Image 1: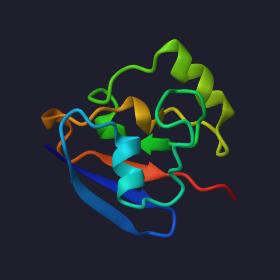
Image 2: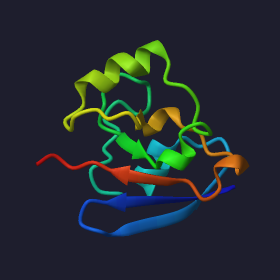
Image 3: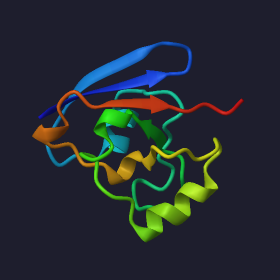
Image 4: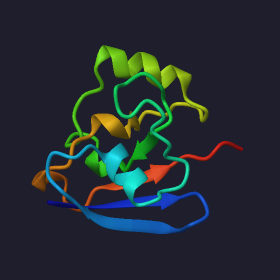
Length: 106
């Protein structure tokens, strides 16, 4: 299990224990994290679960593959160096303490 924190632009934080193997989009929608919609259900065909990974966690969240890279070009908020689709980050014990920032369109 991993304790994950989503930080919203307005300063709110939502922190929950996430079961190993669950993707973080599913965890976010189950816990009503604002701006995380997951319209495609996690099949990597939208970009509505876009997050910014805290820089200290970038290496542990894994590499962006080619399909995710393409989808990140379609986000509502401009892509940054630490952009990920949360459906592609899978909860595991080594992600315990992970912090994700939820982008919000201006």
